[in-house]
Picture 1: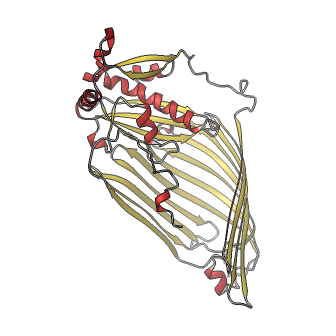
Picture 2 (picture 1 turned 45 degrees about the vertical axis):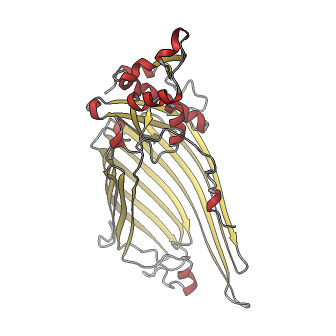
Picture 3 (picture 1 turned 30 degrees about the vertical axis):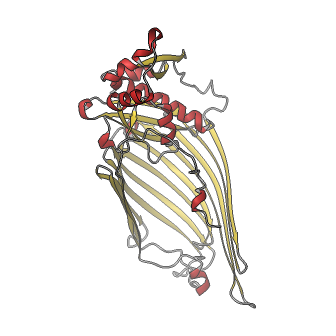
Length: 442
């Protein structure tokens, strides 16, 4: 539901400033103690729920929006601000701010949106988000006793946002990225080296998405087993892909992917794949930050040239396959949940297949208590790439080669419980820097 607050956000940036009733007309403002009592008694209680996105610095928002009471848990708040995000075509982020009314504001909900560019500084991006949160909170503050102590001051008179067209953009919506990273660690008898690079280009519009990517990775492990024996383990690979997606209404999309790869770990000298696909989302794609239920189907063909002869005595082959998947994601005030199912089947031998099932949730059980669980299991019957010569003991221990297996699984669980003061208005970073000085060992 887009309200007047949402419409106002597109034309005016506002700053809310706390004022004291007694400060006008030459009267003295209340003492610090009196002001604190007023804030605790009348100030709106707000819980900003931004876990999991890039600009989630609660200390920053506490300082920028200092005229409300920030709570540690949504159960103590009158307004729950749920922040979700998704990537934009230019490499930035589109943030959706859902304001969920609680207690006396039950049923009074709102939604605002704000975008950030890829090259925007972190402080600038968080300032834009903070301003938008302030706009959304204004309608709630207006219904409390705090409204007499808050005024809205125009910061700038800005024009309505302009929708760019290809004629306005000298890059025609193309975005390019170059990434490189490396890691090296050494001791007297062992050393580890890892490096990877990636170059990508993409063009995203409302009607289509086009992506290109090239990457490579290199990993080297060296071990001095004894004075006369040294073991060296090396894995390397490269990959390239091209993806085209066409929008077909609010629920449908179709497209295709071309990919090429090389991997010593997977015994693939060269693999080339082409696959068209179609996808249906039960919910409109403009609600994708809050909920998705997607069904995907593709039919493709892969050409494989192997480094070593496989367990099926082949050095090359062509494999047609089809893939079906279902993915569900939801994020609500109570937490978040996701689940996915995928099956891959070779069309030239239906007995060869792979089934993946993954899921998890992050649930706020009761006030202050949250529980998280993530896991997955896979059934593998399609390892046609395994080398016939097998793997040596050293290659097994260093994961230099893919091993035969009938299944895979993983599980991650945990919980957190916090209790004590319901407020978190004060920010005091002294002796608590990100380097965690007192936790370091010398």
